[in-house]
Image 1 (cartoon, rainbow, N blue to C red):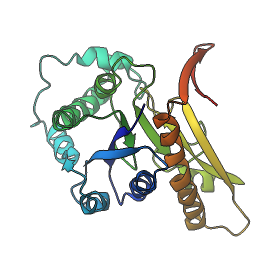
Image 2: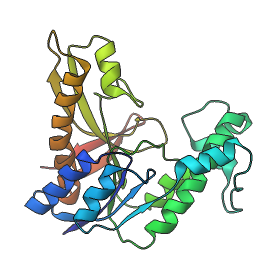
Image 3: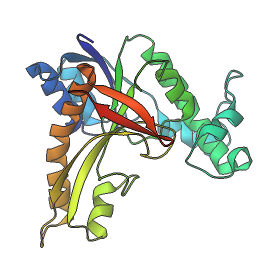
Length: 253
């Protein structure tokens, strides 16, 4: 594949972003980050990117969501088929008749239209979610996953999927009294953390460990795992195949 061009979405401090930047700088990943985007104008990860001379931009999700809730938001453009998107999505039941789902996807798609508009300035091979705390809709996913042999959106999750999807993976792991925690890198699909798994790392949760201990152990593994999985993508060693209706990721030697 040669030198891979990476786009990144963040919401917070960007420690995983920094791990990927460092892996690119060291040559572990044969690639470079070409843009960093955020839903949060105060995200610390934007500062990390700007210090490296990486272009950044922000899409104001919070404002768009607030406008929709107040009934003053913009309408979706004519080219967006909301019913088709509601049929594809796997986050809500009830499809097009679910008013909550309609509001949710309307606000997210409006934000995604802005993201996609700003992304047009950059040529990228892979989009990584590095602590991006927003759900991507089928509208966005289908426009990034243009017909290729591999999906193009990768995420890191703070739990050993399929256990504990959602926002607070380490917290859920800790509160359930698990003896083992971990992190997972996976491709994005239409569900919540349900996409095909690329790699995982685990750690022991010892008697006396606090939630902070669990988060610390997990983050240390995330900073190793994410660059490793991106490296596999850059080296064209990942392939997807279907097995009994389920999409799996295989790693070439």
